[in-house]
Length: 408
Image 1 (cartoon, one colour):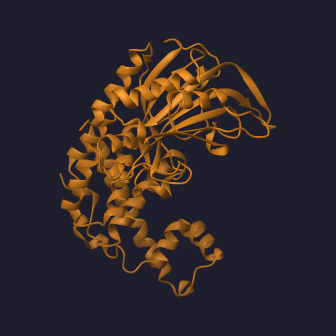
Image 2 (image 1 turned 90 degrees about the horizontal axis):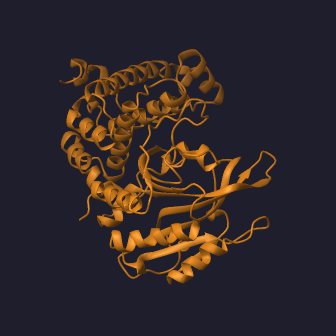
């Protein structure tokens, strides 16, 4: 079995052997002035260079970048989605084109990682009323003797409503137990792992597309999704980097159920990484995302057992996570911040229960009730919904074992 660390080394060595310089994987926090809250892809820190600015390391780059996405938050718990994950990337800043990128991609999967080509399927941009099909990528798949499926919206990549955009070609791997069948749009056992984007245009606010002077190539491959394939596991939650979580949490808190174990593992791991990048819980912005993850973790844990507490978590889990994401911070302050947020949430729930026990809230809550609870008592709507529908969830936690304080 190839480990996650070996997977990273194989990827980076492959591209470095082909003239790509290694760029340091950055923080989850974008540079000052960037409007997004978190880095969402490996290309995000390289946007100025894909737009034409010369990069100090040259025109061929590679790296591994930690990323965070909240758009898929409700999908976390399935076989492929994570909140914080790592992206393996390669870039051509006006050097080689899409066909070369795809050929190297298939070579790495086939020869570097030993993936049977019969388990590989491609998709390409099939064209629309504004842009013609991606003929170059289409021919490349045919030359390689591999199946390819044209789509429209699924194979057009953009960095938002404006900015860099262009056709992409996606590489899918078969995860079924039988021989591959169907196509990526007809059978969800084809899992997308690697996206090769040709940055050909800049979209303006009026929707117009302006060709860039020097088209670039941006590729991104989810490390955990690739690990699932290489380690032959049912989901990303069974790969080696999650094993400390999947073995420790049931020992601490008993059976959680598969879905709850996945959500708790993902959210705790993600919270540690966000804290490791020096974000703290708050009412808005990045801190709000962190607070939301911690509270989702706690409501999941307390649903079945209100005595569960994050103070049970051993420091080894913090150490393992911070080390894997190359965050050189002391795990003890990270743990303290996590426990402080648990205590604040505990107090908020107790206060909320007292407010909702008033006869005014005996029936279903109305929009006016939600506004009153938020404006007068600082109780967010989602927590009001949670408290109004719970059945003894977390009741009396201030009298539980947590009163003794965090464990050493």
